[in-house]
Length: 45
Image (cartoon, rainbow, N blue to C red):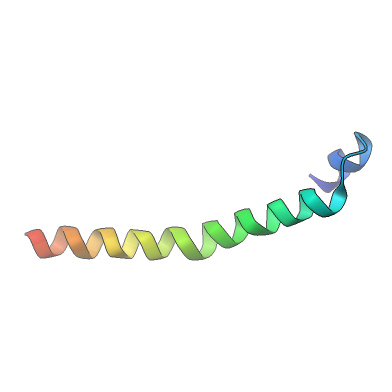
């Protein structure tokens, strides 16, 4: 993605920071939310 941003003269810092936020969201927030949802489902049954 950084190469594409460089080729189209985009701001590399902005593109990189968006990618870091995406990775953090995928690896930290989604598993945590999934655990919470699964716990709620198990408590109902």
